[in-house]
Length: 255
Ligand SMILES: [Zn+2]
Image (tube, rainbow, N blue to C red; front, side, top):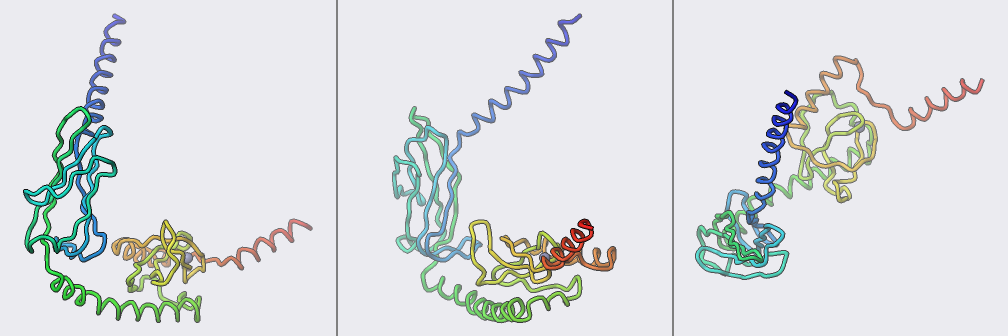
């Protein structure tokens, strides 16, 4: 009687371990990525300039051949497996990039394929101008506004009614971890590894902020209204206020 549950458990464990082992074996793929070193990428597949292909695979990956269409453009036998190329060396139009990897024991791995439309330098410059000119205008505008708002008038932004849709410019917007209000990041804010060093214009908290998605920011704007309704006021307590409260309470405790 007592053996049966044990057999069941064993069967269960085996059933659990085998897929896991299969997952570990699943590392047997070669993944190819394309990255821009210096040049233009429309985001919709048009590229021009200097790009790199990088392949990653299992630990025993020994050699990778890189292809553009049917032509092998490089053969790398040392990690990191990558090759730099310039699109101008190839005819304009759609090209397919791929890689074939070989492990030290001779297994062959085929990568995913990446298709891109190689455009001319003139086309990419036209496209860049179309993007850059309004962008520069916007950047300049935001610079002026953000400097005026956060350096000169400082905390005046507090007067912004809850839920007001903000414009998040070039640097994007962040959500203050303390007061939860969304605010645009300064373009000239100091770039740190994890984000931008900037100061929340509402509560004055300095922090390293990453720009959030527009959906998140809009949700945070909407949340301001909800909080405002729920609490009557927004949770905003400056360092000075906090310090003063602490001083007050310690004074009473001293009595
Ligand atoms: Zn804040």
